Image 1 (tube, rainbow, N blue to C red):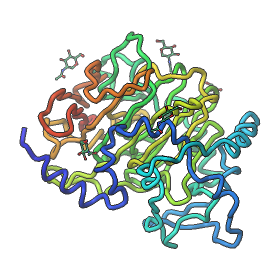
Image 2 (image 1 turned 60 degrees about the horizontal axis):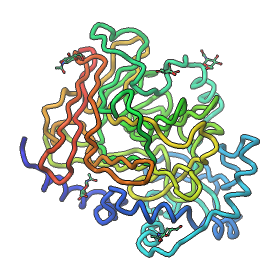
Image 3 (image 1 turned 90 degrees about the vertical axis):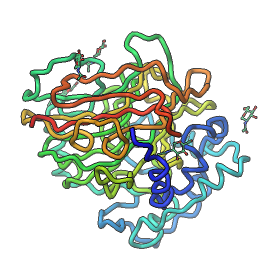
Image 4 (image 1 turned 90 degrees about the horizontal axis):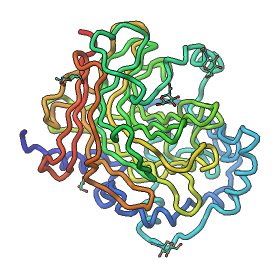
Length: 401
Ligand SMILES: *[C@@H]1O[C@H](CO)[C@@H](O)[C@H](O)[C@H]1NC(C)=O
Ligand SMILES: *[C@@H]1O[C@H](CO)[C@@H](O)[C@H](O)[C@H]1NC(C)=O
Ligand SMILES: *[C@@H]1O[C@H](CO)[C@@H](O)[C@H](O)[C@H]1NC(C)=O
Ligand SMILES: *[C@@H]1O[C@H](CO)[C@@H](O)[C@H](O)[C@H]1NC(C)=O
Ligand SMILES: *[C@@H]1O[C@H](CO)[C@@H](O)[C@H](O)[C@H]1NC(C)=O
């Protein structure tokens, strides 16, 4: 393996302007202790100063249109049972804000992501506009088109044309009786080719009983109407499941200036040191059991503990998932089989597991690799890369060539 990481890190520091605190934050839940205490943001204050006169429809610098929705009007609060939560959050959101480091991180502003230079007015959150047509269309696709975990799939090298999901992942071992309260990763960004309604995602998946959360990037023209890799969140909680904010089980967003579903990238060029990373964390709040999403070290939203049937996660996986929709399987990762080099491969690094006692594991040795079809998609792991990022998972493939 080429020792190309110094270059990669340099690029990381240089490129990801919007998340330039990553390096100090280390994306390793070194701050887990603090985060548990820091249950939320200045939402309380924000809610008091809603700027009535500000624009309600805004655009990102990429030209995506978002609607600024009042915090308490976001779809996640549509569910009747959530109305009580709303009150609860208004009253108890803010707990300790003692830690200056966390303060600093959360005080960062991301106005530069927006045409108007600020994002949504205080007290509102940006939600991507979806037409009724698109929502209906999304709902008309079969249940098989929805994101899933790999655990219920078995190896079958011939099965590439059926309406199918394929996985190349590293995952916590099957049948293991462990529980997790947190998980994180850094993931390289690419733009694999797909044909609607196929999708190709690179993500982590956290299974919480029958429920789950996925976060990462996805190329999904049916959802986003383009071929760009975009950040996404997928939630399944009880009878509800959806991308981003599209249902009552969806994430409750708390930032007025960070768009979910934004274009990631520019995607890395294969063989170059310019690797673009996104970092994601899902971590339970020790105080109230809510699950928080961290994106680039910033807490951008949460799921109330109550919407999931159980408290802790049972299993976790990192890697690629594609949905073929009865067409030849689409590309996964960067569309190439891994060569075990970060410059050439789609990969996940800096993976972390947090156990039920909030103990952080950065080695994550209890994982196995799984590909349901390694003629089309492969996965390898390097437990001890010797690079500063520790455990690396390389994955991807051309699909049905
Ligand atoms: C991975 O972790 C190392 C050490 O904590 C950090 O320096 C590096 O920036 C991280 N890499 C990414 C891609 O987040
Ligand atoms: C977090 O809260 C616990 C008690 O709730 C306290 O013992 C601990 O010192 C706090 N940690 C920080 C970093 O504030
Ligand atoms: C999807 O599954 C749900 C319940 O699991 C069911 O009610 C619905 O009819 C299914 N939709 C399709 C299109 O099969
Ligand atoms: C996956 O398998 C488990 C049992 O191993 C079962 O409880 C669960 O319902 C299955 N999920 C799906 C989506 O088939
Ligand atoms: C492909 O998967 C099969 C079944 O898990 C395994 O026996 C084989 O070693 C794998 N081949 C490669 C190249 O990963």
